[in-house]
Length: 156
Image (cartoon, rainbow, N blue to C red; front, side, top):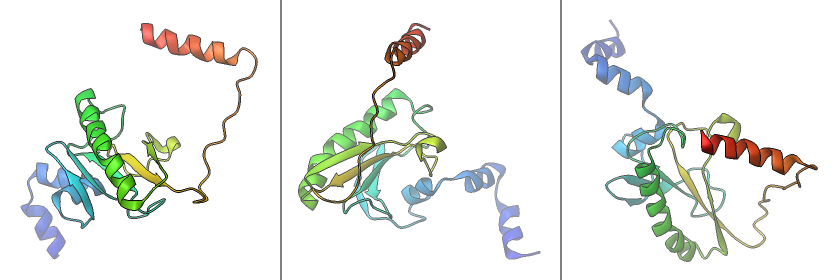
């Protein structure tokens, strides 16, 4: 047998499933993959993005893995937001940013690449060349229709 096969045979089913399903971020939290840790508390972990939009681009993640906002318990989301709120002014000052974008991609269509919920803190600088999303006005009657759909889901 090969060394990998011997290793797999020594793992419990739980260990094997955990090893096979861990996200990149879970490996970072455990220290299996190095990172530039910015902050850590009992519930959250923050580190510099390896492909930053701008210097200081930081990811805030829950220590417990949830794939996205839709699966995230409210208490965990609030813990992440407390960490974001704490970090934003400090990161802004540290890198001399003119502003900060906060973002969370949820789902492939939204650009999510790592399926462990995370919030981006992105320092912004005047003239940094990054464009904001272009908005477009609603067509006649469209806003009212969208509002009705949202209100319907709020009542459900």
